Length: 399
Image (cartoon, rainbow, N blue to C red; front, side, top):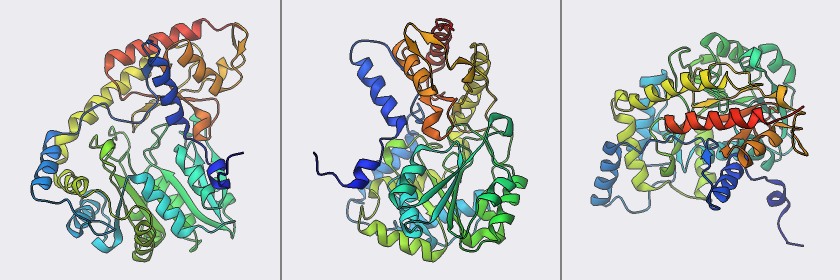
């Protein structure tokens, strides 16, 4: 028996990473797998951002940095919050971390004690659940459907809140389904949470820039009644194609930012100095410099939705944000390929990988079985080929 801690044994490998690993293993055997499982832009980081990183090295930004980040970079983030979101944060309320995933864990560790409740609408990003449980939280899942636009109702939220509720966490635009809460919908949620001063909101806005204009982006912290209860999480990976740079950040009440800084000082200390300088350049740039990515994703979305609707047994809507489609596949569950029965969306996702050579992520990973996530952060020719493979694989299923 290996002497692993209980927390290490209980924490799972995110299924997004697991499916990507299986795809790489299959590719290593010589098969041409089209991977639509990871949430990573297929664009390279823009040259003007890379140039600023080169300049930072020349200027010798190669030493230890303040734990929460360089002051001028934190001020650039505060300026971004004011300019784009109408949020008033000082540099002292900003903490820069090694990716938004670390930002989220810092918050959970800072706020949640064992036995307290974390409320999570499903579908949710894969790491919310494990991070909350790592901190000893009791997790409450609020399920949604395609018919509700994958969004919770105010009554659902209010009925879930107890005197043990500590955090409500959600993403908008949402990963895995691309849903975006309207200003009115967020106002309704804010009005409920404002009644519970010991309940805090983590507003994950990492996909903010990947918005196709159908629903305006609204930050939860823009509602004065919950400003002091809200931690806004964002980063550079999605909107600026900077996944490998690992830069995430929060805007939060000063006492929460201070606690996150203390925790981070004992784990990773400050985020990579060169990446921080590049972050400042990205945030201060004219947003039109990366609009070509958004425009391309919007075109791909329209094509993917149209192609996916031709797949027997797939039901889907057109997501207003992010870069995923999230079809419902319940009509295919129970069907067979040879002796293998598609009992769950996990089975179907594995079948599409092994027989169709298309890597996806089952909805079970996001707390919503019966759906499958397809990323369209890939070349159009690969997307078209992937859908044809999926269509053929589904056609081979029998009752």
